[in-house]
Image 1 (cartoon, one colour):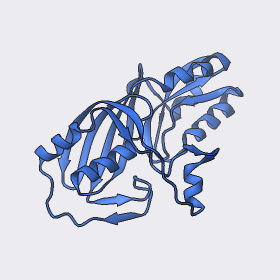
Image 2 (cartoon, one colour):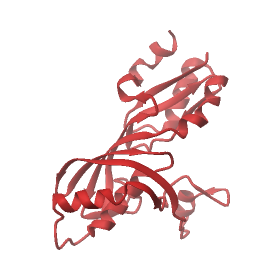
Image 3 (tube, helix red, strand yellow):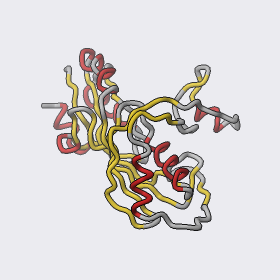
Length: 217
């Protein structure tokens, strides 16, 4: 079997959990995915089953992606998302819609982004998040990434919902954090759905309940 397809990952399981489930169903050892989704995130996970398909995953990782992000303003998080310890910020002035729009546009284009310290990026061969959990102080250097567009979908303080079209390597958690810093309110990523990876969209993604049927066809 050699197939490249999209799975809709629900909140809860890790991306690796999905891969292990597919391995059990198919008995195929060569199974991988293109671009990790955090356990709290949902959406399109591109999966390769079979040696030829898994070889294509590297090019899939580099493709553009679209996300729907729910951001909570007025607080920050140690992990930049809802999973970490949160700190409430005193906000003197609640941002207006106009201020939100201006700030969002500052993050469109090629920007320098500092990855979350709770990430799988390796420092001397060891993931950053493991170093942080062991009590080590970690600082990751900013990286150049590209954000093609940010669309404001809804704003009702302290809830902000945006659609983000990105190149590869963008951390939406970090974007949420940086938007909060630019607004002077603090912010963290409350919810995330990836709706597109390259040509793979959420509409055609296989749900977990249909995995066995899809893989046995």
